[in-house]
Length: 139
Length: 294
Image (cartoon, rainbow over all chains, first blue to last red; front, side):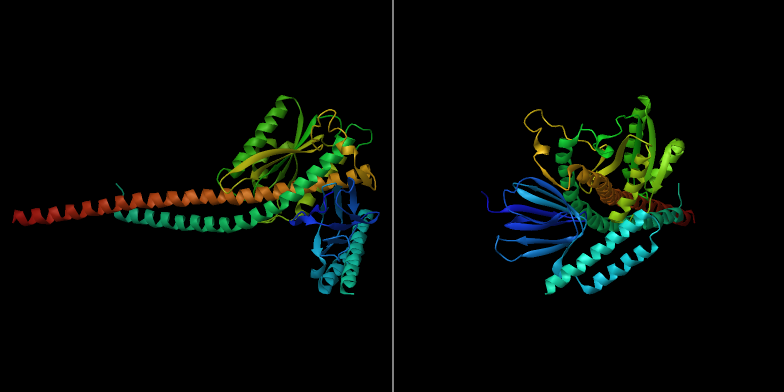
């Protein structure tokens, strides 16, 4: 059994990460799941949350990214994460979050149709998750 | 024969043209760098998305209840062609090549007796298509970034296309754009995006590839999420590729324009000097023969 897996983290704007890692923890739609080498094939949608990249199973996360949703494809060789947007958790700032919150709240206020409202609430949810990820990282 | 003054005026005017074209070349070169970077960074996502969708689709195609974006409407009578060009000209054959390919596609469809509709992206495309196919135009979009397009712009187009598809306005959707290969080569590409072109699976060995996956939440739910997203991504990629191609085409067009202007200046200068010398000679002969006559 291989002891590393190939992790590709890509957003539409760029390829954020493409390297061999020991383990990844991914925010799946039905809960966080860990991916180890030789994982069974799996396709999942992602919820907003933190992707943590570990060098080994027992190591502390080497890198953490906040992702705001997307898709994960896992096969025995590796894991591909297609995300809408990914920000390194270290780079989250409270100013940025506050700004996003204002935008999202305005969206909620001005939403006219049900679809708009769903989208706006989703945006707000993403901001909440982002704030939580930041406070967890700080703690 | 042109007088000395005329020649001087010509030379100055060609010189200023040369200055302009070389400045445009420089601008295009710096924009190209950014556009190329953006296009190259967007490629992995689009490719992996296609791969993922291909795996997923292989296991789903032909089943009842497969999403329409994947399975299509079951007909291919009505086509939507998205013709993507630049907003501005002065970029060599870039716009013309795309439009020529689009027109060839339209002719083919007409020959087969199919219906077609045109959605234009970029002002040049609209202006050109309006001439002959004004009745077939269903939409237009040209508010994309001057150098690098943003994803929301692609989403805008994708939404327009999806809503037309949901309304049953067309069965097959094709993008026509230029793929960026290098600063001097761009390849006009036709890419079918609706229904999603499922990769051919060899009978037997690989047929189960799509079915080995576990799905969270369920395969149809992922598909319904993934398909519209893929459409937006493919359009986004096309926008970026097109943007880089445009700058590349403009750069090489302006480069050759600058060179031509340089050659022209050289030729004009030779003519100018010859004319000037001829004039001096004539003047001298006049003076000498005047002196001899005394």
